[in-house]
Amino acid sequence: MTETLDGRHIVVTGGTGALGGAVVGKLLEQGAVCHVPNAHAAAPSHFPFTTHDRVRLAHNVDLSDSAKVEAFYHQLPELWGSIHLAGGFTMAPVEKIESASFAEMMDTNARTTFLCCRAAVRSMLASNTAGRIVNVSARAGLEPRRGSGMVAYAASKAAVAAMTLAMAEELKGKGILVNAVAPSTLDTPANRTDMPDADFSKWVSLEAVAEAIAYLASPANLAMSGTLVPLYGRA
Image (cartoon, rainbow, N blue to C red; front, top):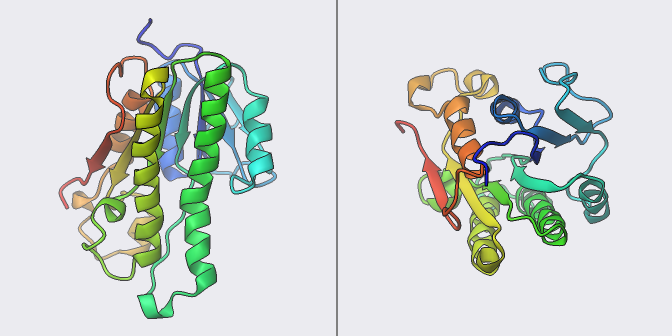
């Protein structure tokens, strides 16, 4: 088995976001073909790979819609990897969390991850591919006591972590490796704007997270499965 990603097809959900752009860029450097589902009718203007010859954008794909997720994965060439970055974040004291807000967090983070994992597994099993799945949990999902106001977010990311472990165990005899990264605060322009007084040097760089994800998704990863990789920077 070659240890490169040359010509291998990898899905990157959330690929047009800040972390997504870093991950797509890293995978392209290693020769992968990136399939990026986008919820909107066009890619955002800041996405740098719209015209790249190894980036396949698919628009109007609602990742919380089971039928649309299945249709997106069904039309892909032989799938090597699926990386699930799509998600959201919200904060509120527990007494102020509405039922709809809690459900939205679970849909945005946990449901989308499940639907994409399921579709990816179906594709890999159909083609007998010993592929790679990488999910994104969060520090709050592994250490929910660390912050306040994150009950819904922590629960949704804890669900992602639990799914990752359960799937890795279920699929270990079929050659599909399933892992997740769990970053703390990412050093993104949006986070710097929202938290201007924070010490940015303690945050996790997009490059560091992209590097970890690319390794977990690569053929060079021969044994890691069922691993939740904490990426906490200096925090």
